[in-house]
Amino acid sequence: MKVGLLALAAALAAAAAAVVMLDNGPSTAFWLLVVLVVGASWYGLEALARLDKPRWVGALVVPGLFGLLLLWLWQVLVVGFDIPMVLLPSPARIGHQLAANAGQLWQDFRQTFLKSVLAGFVLGSASGFIVALLVDRSPFLQRGLLPLGSLVSAIPIVGIAPIMVMWFGFDWQSKAAVIVVMTFFPMLVNTIAGLAASNDIERDLMHSYAAGYWQTLLKLRLPSALPFIFNALKINSTLALIGGIVAEFFGTPVVGMGFRISVEIGRMNVDMVWATIAVAALAGSMFYGVLALIERGLTFWHPSYRQEQS
Amino acid sequence: MTDAALATPRPSVVLERLREGRTLAVLAVSLILIIAWYLGAIWLNAGLVEQRLEHPTTAEFVATAWSLERPVLPAPHQVAIEFYDSVFEREIDSPRSLVYHAYVTGSATLVGFAFGTLLGILLALAIVRSRTLDRSLLPWIIASQTIPILAIAPMIIVVLGNLGLTGLLPKAVISMYLCFFPVAIGMVKGLRSPDPLQLDLMRTYSATPTQTFWKLRWPASMGFLFPSLKVAIAISLVGAIVGELPTGAQEGLGARLLSGSYYGQTVQIWSALLMAALLGMVLVAAVGFLERVVLRHMGGRP
Image (cartoon, helix red, strand yellow):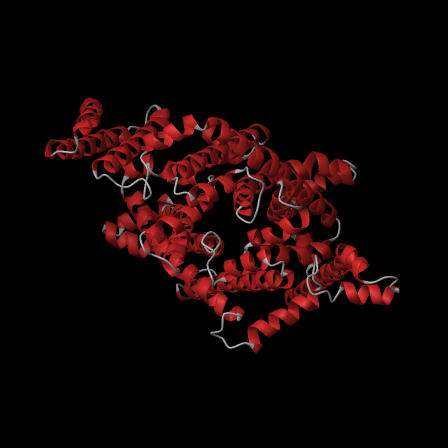
C-alpha cells in the first residue's frame, strides 16, 4: 500500500516534469517520462483498487485518479505528437474555449436545456404517465398499447424532427415537440409495468381495508410503481438531451447547443465543438444525477438501496 | 395457490384466448391511431385547403385535405402509396428508391454494430479480468451513458471527411461509439452473473479459469448480452441516420429526411420515416431471432 502511494506521488511529480519539459518540444527523455508516469500510476491504482476498507477510495478516488490520468495523457500526447487541432484539440484548448466563450455557451445551454429539453421532458413524461393511468383501467387497451409501445423503442424517433420544425417553427417549441414524442413511450410502458408491480397479497390487503380505487392507487400501487417510473425518467433524461441537440441540426434560430455544434464544425473550430460537448456531457450527467438523488429519497424502502446501507 | 387453480380451468384454452385477445387489442389500438391520423390530417391541412378552394362542400374539403401535394400532415394512404412507389416501382439502385437508401443506412448500421459489439465485449472481458480496470474504467463507462454521445456525430463526419474518409465508414464509426457502451455494461453484468454457488461448484470440479469462463461465465452472460444488443442496434441505426445529416449526404434515410425538409416534401419525409421505422423493427427482430436460436441451442430458457 505504501509503495502504491509512493508510486502515485512519483507519477504526479513525473507528470508535472513532463508538462514542463514539453515547452521545449518533445525529446527522448520526455517520452521516457510519459512511459514512467503511465507505469507508476497504473501500479499505484492497482494498489488502491485492491483496498476494500474505506469505500470512498474505490468509489471516488480510483476513478477520479484514472480520469485525471486519461486527461493528462490526452493533453501530453496531443501536444507531444503535434496532432492538428482539427483532428483532436487538447484539453487545455477546450478549457480555454470554455472559459473564453462562457457567455455564449450559457446562451446555448439556456436555449437547448432550460427551454426545449426541460419543457419536452416534463410534457412528454407527464403525458406518458397520465395516459398510463387512464389505460390502466382498461386491460383491453393495455394489451393493445404495450406491444406497440415496446415496438416504438426500435424506431429512430429523432427522424420526426424535420416535421416538427415545419409544424412548430424554428424556435424551441419544435424541439420540445420532438422530445415529447421521444419521452412519451418509455414513460407509458414503464408506468404500466410499474402499476402492475404490486402483488396480489398486497392488493387483497387493501381490498380487505375496503380501500377504494384511488386509495389503492395512491397508497399502494403508485409507490410500488416508483422504481419503474424513475427508471423511465432516467432513460428520458438522456433521450431528451439527445432529441434536443439532434433536432437543432434540422433548423434552429442562431442559438442552441446543436446549432453551435453544427456551425462551429463548419468553421472547423473543433475546440469550440468540444467545449459545447463538454457542456452537454455535464448537463446530461447532472440531470441524471439529480433524478437519481430524488429517486433515492423517494424509494429508500426499495431493496436495491437497503442492501447498500446494511 | 388454490385460487389460481380454480381460476385457470385449462391452460391451453386460456393461453389461446390470451393470444387472441392481444392480437385483437393491438389491431383495435392501431385502428384508433389511424383514424386519429386521418382526422388530424383534416384538422392540420384545413388552412391549406381553405387557400385552395372557395366554398367547398364537406366532402370536397375532406377529399382535398387527404390528397394535397405538400400537406402539413399527409394522410396515411398518401404515405403508403409513396412508400409503395419508392419501394416496388423504382429500380433498386436508383437514388429514388427507398430500398437503396435503406441499404445505405442499414449497411453502415450493421458495420458499426458489429465493431461496436466486438469492442464492447473485449472491454467487458478486460474489466472482468482486471480489478483495477473495474474500479477505474467502469464508473466512467457507466457515467458516459448519461451524456448525449450522439452530439459528436457531426464532428466525426467532418473530421474523418477531412482525412478523406467519406461514405459508409464515418457513419459506422458513430454507430460503433454508440453501441459500444451498452454492450460493455451488459456484458460485464452478464459475466459476473454466475452466483457463488455455481462458481464453487466449478472449483470443486477443479476447473481452470479458462474452463470456468467457457463453461459457466460465457454461457451465463448470453441472457444479458442480447437485451443489450437490442438496445445497441436500435441506437446504432439512429447514429447512422444522424451521421447522414451534417454533410448533406446524397444517399441514406437521413439524407432523404433532410432533402425532404429542404423542399417541403412532407410525403417523402413520412415515407422515409416509415422505412426507418421498419428497418429498426427488422434489425431488432433479427437480434431477437438470433437470441432465441442461441438460447435454444444452449438448451437454456425457451
